[in-house]
Every structure is written in C-alpha cells, then in structure tokens.
Image (cartoon, rainbow, N blue to C red):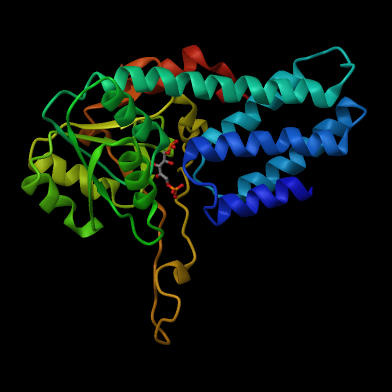
Length: 307
Ligand code: RUB
C-alpha cells in the first residue's frame, strides 16, 4: 500500500490541502495503487478498496468530498454484476468519472460565482480554497476590476497560497493577519465574502477552516454578504442520521514547536458556520439556500447515501 500510504501522509501534513485537491489526490492514488496490486477477482479488489479507504479516511477526518469519492467507486463497482475483464481498469474509470464530476462542478461554480463579482468591489476570503480562487480568477479574466483581501491563516499559512495564486494572475490582493478580519471588513470596505467548505451537514451548516465563523460574525456586523462556494460532493450523509461531522484537531506543534512546559495548546483545523450567517451556497446546481442543499443532494447524487 505504498502509494496510498504516501498520499495519506501528504494529505495529513497538508502537502496536499483543500477538500477538492484532497479528493482528487486520494482517488488518483487508488487508481495507481490498484494498477500495481492488480487484483484478479472482484472480492480481492473489494478487500483492497476497503483497506485503502481505511488508510485514506484516517488521514484527515473532516473530508466528505474524499469519502464520497471512495463511496462513488464502491457503489458503482458493486453494482457492476459481470466479472469485469480488467478490474483495475474499471475502478480507474470510476475514479476518473468522480474526478471529472468534481472538475465540471468547479467550472460551473466559477461561472456562477464570478457573476457576483462586479467592478469596484472588494472581495474577501479566508484560507485557501481552490474553488474560491477559481471564482476570483475567472472574474478577473472576464475583465472585472476589483480588490481582494485574504487572511494569512495561522498556523500553516494557507492564505499565502491564495495570495500567491491571485497576485501571479495579476489580481490586486492585500494580505492581513487573521485577527485583522473584522478590521479589514470595515477599513477595506469589503463588499462580498467568499469562502470554501470542507463539509456541509444535513441542516445546511458549513464546516470550513478555523476562523470562518468569526469572519461570518464580522460580516453580519457590517451587513456584508457571506457566500460559501462548494460542490455538493462535500455533503456529509452521516449527519442525516445524527452523527456530528468530526472536527480535526491537529498537532499543537504546528502552533508552537517549542512551548513552555505544561502549556496546553489547542489546534482545531475547522469550525462550523450556522446557516443563518450564510447568504447562499454557490454550487454546481446553482446558488442554493443552505437549508435546501440536502434535498438537492438526495435528488441528484443518491450514491452519497449508499452504505
Ligand atoms: C482548506 C479549507 C478550504 C476548503 C475548500 O483547509 O478550509 O476552504 O478545504 O477547499 P486545509 P476547496 O488547508 O486545512 O485543507 O475549495 O479547494 O475544495
């Protein structure tokens, strides 16, 4: 399981970060690993898939886009009743289908989201979301003139990825420390906030990088529209039956590698944003009110609810 273990380790230490990148990398790793292991029977392939699932799911707990991708493979593979000629090839094509769905969703979200950015605006974001960066870059390439504010995102500075991606494309971008979030909304006269998502619950609650709820609260104070941009594949079906989406607690050494003895350091990766703070979720199915998302997922993606 060398390829899977390496990918899981890269996800855990954030060499691969962001829910979409994590899902794509995990499914690519499954394909590559199966090519090496080359299972000869359906049963053998299923045993390997379950083992890979276990390793990948342990890498980062708050990642339904990855979990739903593995589910997509298992759901469709188990419904393929004929013994396939080439098992690895079949699984590889299922992984590619899910990656394609993710990429098409991303393109559609960029088109929809970019329309919400108009000339003269200041747009703010937090952390690094490939979907949000995509929306901003699309609006910029459409010729819109606007400014962006992004947070640095302690402790691992994913905001630097956002800042680099945007400045490299020519977008006028200002970086702030996380605790200047509220200050920036007021002083930079922010008009629109766009954040990504790691998970969406049955109640329309969104989980995203720690600090996102604070940003939503500050947005409410200044009446700034707060939008989440995400494909529906981040829906967490476990939340329908009462389970809470787990919030990953990371290594305290990311916060301080040489702390004084007896100091307790908490390092949560994500937090929840209640739907009352979210003006809309920009998805591949359109801009949805948070409470509507569950119904849309049931209708469009039944595989998400399979065992
Ligand atoms: C990244 C993060 C991103 C979402 C969405 O956290 O919170 O907003 O994952 O990303 P981390 P995307 O850096 O801890 O993975 O829009 O690319 O799916």
